[in-house]
Amino acid sequence: MPQSAENIKDHISLFSEPEYKELLAQKKANYECRPSDEKVNEQLEYSKTWEYREKNFARTKAVINPHKACQPLGAVFAAAGFEETLPYVHGSQGCAAYFRSHLARHFKEASACVSDSMTEDAAVFGGLNNLVEGLLNAKHLYKPKMIAVSTTCMAEVIGDDLSAFIATAKEKESVPADFPVPFAHTPSFVGSHTVGYDNMIKGIFNYFWDREKGEVKTGASNGKINIIPGFDGYAVANNRELKRYLDAMGVDYTLVGDVSEVFDTPTDGTFRMYDGGTKLDDVRDAINAKATLGLQHYCSDKTLEYVASKGQATASLNYPMGVSGTDAMLMKISELSGKAIPEAIEKERGRLVDAIADSQGWLHGKKAAIFGDPDFVLSMASFLMELGIEPTHCLCTNAGKEWDAQMKAVLAASPFGADCQVWAGKDLWHLRSLLFTEPTDMIIGSSYGKYLEKDTGIPLIRLTFPVFDRHHHHRFPTMGYQGALRTLVEILDRIFEVADASSDISYDLTR
Ligand code: SF4
Image (cartoon, rainbow, N blue to C red; front, side):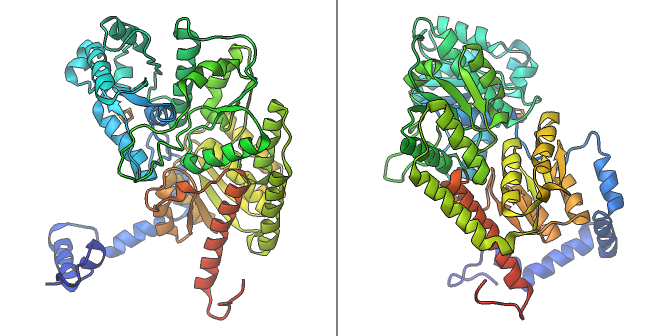
C-alpha cells in the first residue's frame, strides 16, 4: 500500500505511485477507446499552427474559455461595498451559489448573498411571490440596513418587473415602506460583470436620489468628490491605497462601493457578515458632491451619465496604474478638489521611477500578452510600455469597438506599441493560438491563464481577477505608485526565474 499513517500522501504524490500508474494505464488501454498517442500528438501539434489559428479565428458561434462573467456577479460585488447591505439576486438560486463561491475563492473570505429561489412554477407565473417572501425572510434573518436586488437571466427572460414587484412587496409589508431596496436589471445575456457593476451602482444612486421620498436634500455643494472604484479583484488593497492618497491630499471624498473591509474581515472570534462599506447617508448626500470620478470607465459608463443628468461634473479614467496612469488620477483629483499633490506623494513617484531605471536592462524589449477587463488591459499595456515592454497581444473578451479604438490609440502613442495587436471580443482559446504563432515572454492575466502557461511554457503573471490558485495577492495594491512598484517586482521576478532556469553558464549571483 502506498499510503501509511507516518507519510500520508495527497493526490499529487499518491497517483504517481506505481500501483496507481499501472491501474490508470490499464484503464486507458482496455476501456477508454482513445486515439493512439501518435494521433493525439499530431492533432496537438496541428493546434499550434498558423493554419489552425486561421480556422480558430474564423469561429463565429462557439466561444471557448471566455474571460468574463455575467452581469449579476458584478452587481453582487458592487452591492457588497455598502454599509450593512445584503446583495439579493432575484431568480434561480444556483446563480447565487456560483457568485458567492467565485468571490470567496478569490478573496478567501465569506461572501454574503441571497436568492429568492425561483423554480419552474415561477418561470410560468412570474417571481412576484418569491420576491415578497424573499425580502421578508432576508430582512428578518440577516438584519441588513439595505437590500440591493439584481436579477438572474431566468428572471430577465420571463420579464419580471423589479420596480413593480418591490412596490408590491412593500405594500404587503415584507419590508417597511422606507426600507432601502435599490434594484438593477442585470441580464446576463447583455455585456458582462462590469456592466452589472455599473447597473447596480446606478440603481443605488437612483434609489436614494430619485425614489426615496422626502429624504434627499439637494442644495449647496457638500464640497466632496465621489469616487467609483469599479469592479476590481484587488479592491481590498487598492481602495486602502486610494484612501491613503486622498487623506494625504486633504480631499473630502465619498468612496462609492467600498469592499475593502467586507472582503478582508479579521479572524478574532466574531463572524462579520457586514463590515465597513459606504455609509447610506453618504450615498444620499453624494448628489451634492462637486464631482464624480469613475476609476474604471467601462464600469461606470451609465452611472456617470446618470450623475451628469443631475448637473454634476463627471470624469472617468482607465484603472490608474503605472506612472502616467497614477499621474492622471492624482492630477484629476487635484483638479476636481482644488487640493495640491503633496511632496510625499511626489517622492513616491520618484522612487518608482528610480526602480524602473534600475531594472531597465532586464525589461527593455520583452514581449507580453495581456488579458482581462477593458480598463485593466488598457492600463497594463500603457504601464508595460513605460517599462519598455511590448504589449504584443492585448485581449479582452468583454470589450467592443470603443475599447478597440481606445486601445489602438494607446499603442500608437509609444514606439513599444508599434507591432502590438488588439483583440476585442476574443477568448482565451484565441489567445492560445496567438501565443503559439507569435509567442511572448510573459502572459499577464488571471488564474485562467495557467492553462495557457502549461500549454505554451510562457510564464503567467497573475495580476487581475480572479486569482484562485494563489493566496492573498489581493491584499497588495496594483493601483497607484505602490501598486506599480509591486507589479514591477512581480514582472521582474518572473523574468529572473526564467533567466535562472535557462542557463548554467550565466547563472549569475548578481542580476
Ligand atoms: S449566466 Fe444566467 S444562469 Fe448563469 S450564473 Fe449568470 S445569471 Fe445565472
